[in-house]
Length: 87
Image (cartoon, rainbow, N blue to C red):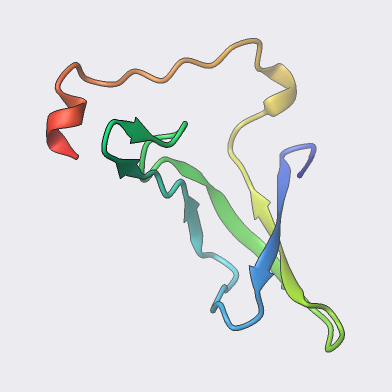
């Protein structure tokens, strides 16, 4: 989810250790000829707060992004031609 330049990451397990200041990056994956939409290790933002209550099943993590999503018209990801060989 997104509110302004703040992102909300939901469904984060309570046992996952998330702290303010942690960097959030894309995970990326490859399986045979298939791969995820986003490459690995692209910075999404930094954690600004972590919240949970005893009754919540998950933590809610607020992330500050340097990107002004409201100002974006289009985004392009450039991948080297030999990127499949590096994975």
